[in-house]
Image (tube, rainbow, N blue to C red; front, side, top):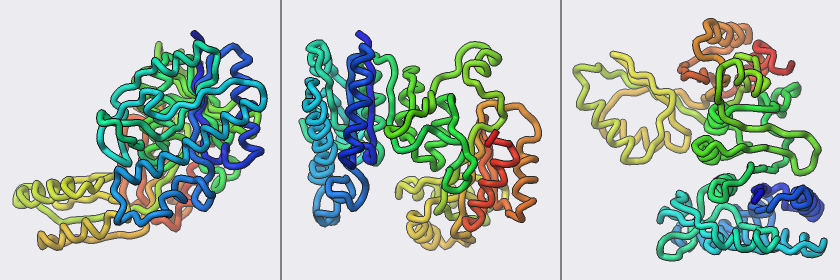
Length: 406
């Protein structure tokens, strides 16, 4: 059976015109001979009547439990599913709408940020065998007790890829309101261009470091099971960005990904806070262990971690700043805080083992008088922490330095 999973985001289904385009995209694949499974997000964004954030604002989040909140939040995607089904039925096609539970999406018990344990696609396959177009609300599943759970913000991407894996689909199409993954944020770098092909590792890092085009957990799942993904614009005819794995020889990879550049793309994450703590590695070992234990206990995520002999430096999100300060004050530790930072991520799977990349980054930022507060690197990414006010200048400078517009 030839199967394709299509996922449509909130902006794609938020207007009647958008929903007509969604229906035409679905029908196009159906006419191509695919058995089509559609995953939809809730309609629109905050302020729109059926958007998830709007539904959340109907209740006091302090008094409504997570289990009840998941029930409420799951409604947006169900509404979208039924409305899209209506558009298809009007055009003479037979849809079948299944809730997360009816689609067999089993999760753990972690309400509002559940993890998919298994998908039993028997019901989906039954309707596909009857030549129906199956529509599944994204972002939701059910636990062993039969209770509704949601997968966290951006969870519809995860739903689509997980269903694709369960059905052994040919590939997953993710439709959004942009032409694909771009070399940089086009609202900041006007000459940013759409990337035709990327590796899973590059896209995962982009998503993890701030790019909002796809959920990082969805990319990681696709990588594990080698599920091809294509990211496209619902409203345009651009071919989009294909996301694939790296297999075969290095030369073959170059040819297949059509990417002979050291750097593929640049992204950023604002709202970072840098903390510097003077601690001696030997004398203060117990303090270090105790601090790390308490940070983990309070579920504070650390980033750009640099542990020197006499200083421990790392960053946290601004929302975790007060919690971290409380821990540090309670332990009587001295510390220095730098607010309003931004993490710039320069990403490319070919940079590993190539000398001079960091030199070029430093040179490009220095030309713009941008101070690097901290840096780190992995096999495919170099991170630089800078002052948030310099974000736009930094992105433009690096984009130009590596000629990503060409």
